[in-house]
Length: 102
View (cartoon, rainbow, N blue to C red):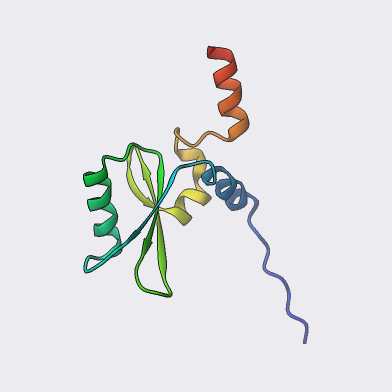
């Protein structure tokens, strides 16, 4: 029996492409839950949004979070709904804005 390939969401692929241009930080969660570790790291390092945080939960699992002006979000949600975040303009739009301002 042949397996059908899972269809990739164009919207999510576009969001993933946009997130590639955002600064990334990799941290270990330690004794804290991953989201708590991410919040502590943002506070202590003084990271300005937008940023992508890769938090290692254990040797097999890494949780991904997006730090935006509105707060901390799961990266998968942001990939699917990137148009809701003003700081995540597609690279072409960001270049057009910079060219029109400068």
